[in-house]
Image 1 (cartoon, rainbow, N blue to C red):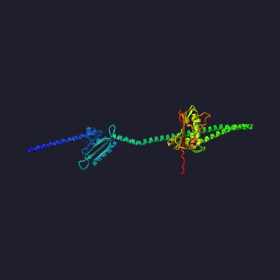
Image 2 (image 1 turned 60 degrees about the horizontal axis):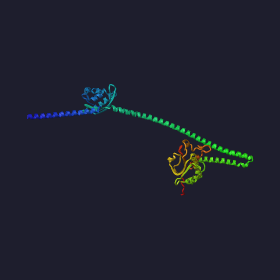
Image 3 (image 1 turned 180 degrees about the vertical axis):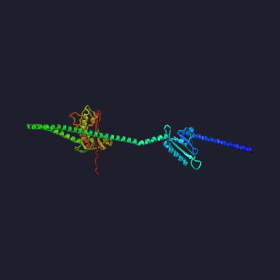
Image 4 (image 1 turned 135 degrees about the horizontal axis):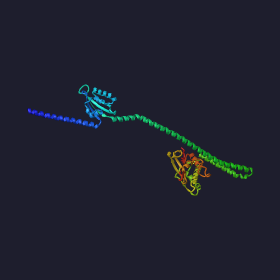
Length: 441
């Protein structure tokens, strides 16, 4: 019986020893995993403060953070670790720890550590107090994390935000200055353009008055000369010879009247005898006149559009405009060439008309006269409608043909445009509004 009890006791002791070994191994494995996890974080240190015995045990990472040799862990009081805290944070940190111990509660605090070389690092510590029963805490345990890099980032963002308003103000100021400079440049450009327009206006007025004065002076000279000769012949009793001087005076007066008519046409003040007419019929009736005017070495082609709309205009003025264009085309081809007269229906949109003179969008009949002659340079094209401007030799043109056509088109509610390049011929297009016969209700 005694031997049996001894055997049971021995087996029980063996089991207890095995359980103890297994428990110690499990605890060792847990501590090892915890240490590996802390090592992997490469920034976390732990502490365990036995408050009753004032025994402050730390791992190597926590000790190094606070400037303590790791082998001194457990040999120094907590106050030794507080010596490494930045002077500006030490009092606050001491009060926070004391309050946590008194409350037996949780702990979370950011503070700075300052090394002997003056280098500062930021730490975030989090822990908890434990007690064996009612009353103050007996143990204070936790972990500390180095957050220096995070603090640097936060400070950089803070600095960026603090300077953002200043930088925005600087850029806004620069933008305002640039805008003011742009406004000044625009005003200067407007003044320059206004001065240019005024100069061009005065130049046109000078050309106009000079041309009128020159032409009227020539015509008045003819009239006055004829009247003077008539006076002398009458005084000498040679009345039968006065007739030729009368004819010369009348001819000069008629040229003056024609000049006045052209000026009125250019200024759009002459009266138009408007009547509905068929464009194709009018051009066909003028084809023989065009052929006799163009010259022998120029080929004339007339292309009449199908179902061309009627227009309401002065047929005499339209005939004169087309004949002027035929003469200009002929003079542009002294060595011969091809002259084309076309009619067609067309619709001008706002976008098309915006590139020309201001004109109401809508349906128009187009009269086009084109040649393959010398064409015009941009400088000549810019002055083509100026009164008394001509590139023809003296005595072969008054410079009022195109300006008269321009005035006629404007007064008729239409438009005239020129498409030309030097060496590529010229196309002149006269657009007149479509005539829609009014119906009585």
